[in-house]
Length: 345
Image: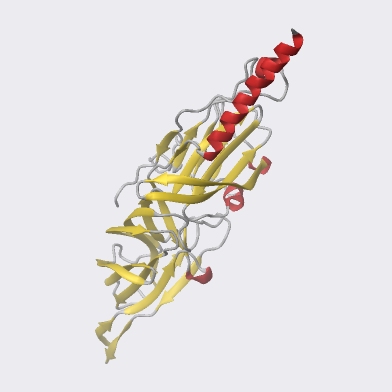
């Protein structure tokens, strides 16, 4: 009789394990619309969702105006090519809406700050759109100018996205970029990420996701761009988190399938309750209910995921019918996403 009970318990455990194996091949995932900032990067004139740490210095680019000067009178101003910034190749097919360009700049002469920008969006080095926009700020000090765009592009795996900028003005200017504050770059809405069901078992929380443009999550952990938060002001220690290469998946999409490789971030020694993952690619206000000091609420994270703790038949640390090592993981049927809303400036 005892042998029959043990065999039955092992059969049940095997059934659960097979079910987990099947779910790994066909994972539950979410693919939400997110607006990411594609930053101008100093190194290699890149365009990337990667952001430097707040303590890292910004890059600057001086642009000299071109015109004809006669007896101190400036005439016949000419367009000046500022530069082209290009992304790495995209990992999987994606449709995107390029909503705006932010430029941090200042007028270094203070004589005449009127100007025009010509903004070209490029796919694989080919122009797909061209917009003109005036300065959007008066050039007094370093300030951000936002230029609204309305360009939709469809990329297939291996394509690149880029931007070329041309300046036409009377004064020399300086552009600031590649910094968490001076976030010059494109605001792009799209299904950039696949998020797989997270796990929270005992004191370990694991999240898994795949990105159209992978970034360095060790850097983002150091910068606090991704955090585990809980009740009673709990904040998990990011130094107890490890970044690992994840799994390879075939994801079914509207126009075929995508081959993706995930990244896994695992936090150990998590002791809080009511855990939520707050994720961004840049800095955010960890306490959005607080006031920033200027009368407005702080910027929330790009994404918030609410987690549920795994449970065994005999409690959080129990196993199937009390057998150690066989914990039933409660499937999370849907990941709760709260995406940031963006305002048009």
